[in-house]
Amino acid sequence: MSEAAELLVNDLDSEFRFRLAERVGDADFLHCFSCGQCSASCPVRRLDEKYNPRRLVRMAILGLKEEVYKSEFIWICSYHYTCLRRCPQGVNIGRVADAAARLAETPDLDPRFRQAVADAVPEVGRCLTCGSCTAVCPETLFDPEHDPRRFIRLVNLGLRERAFADRFKDTCATHYRCLSRCPQGVNINKIMNALRELAQEDGYTYPASLAALERTDR
Image (cartoon, rainbow, N blue to C red; front, top):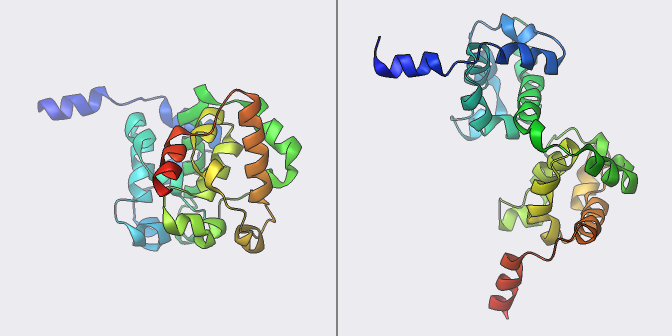
């Protein structure tokens, strides 16, 4: 066996697939036999071939935990469910990606933060990360890093520090196009205001990077 192969085997986490199955709520993804139907029908993969649901599930089953956690796909899976409809084994890729994302960030989760936002904006929990908000957000058109869908996901996961550090919190310009397109009626503008208030209460200040940018514009 080559050194590279030995390193690969040593990196396997034999318990990871069982932890993931517990978080998903079932072990259906273990039935995957890598036929590729999910990747062939995935809308996200059409944008960039590196986003490969078949590869992600395969890595999870093998126990390649670090590779799964480092994958961008677990954060941008858009739950179109074309993979589930096409899968001959009924593997729900969206649920697998969501569970992997939650496992990856478990040490940093703050349920009190999530509840604090929900107390101010109850509809935040309705978000199903469809991406309609990001598709019409003027801020995203200027800079793809300003992504309302990603931001709402951080909030609903309870990732307080990452949500406070996300520049979208301070650049949201309340155009309300997101609210008009959201199928769940999630008012992102109200969430932004609530988060700014929470950030100030917790000692966070206006980002220095944005302040410097504004001085440059002047």
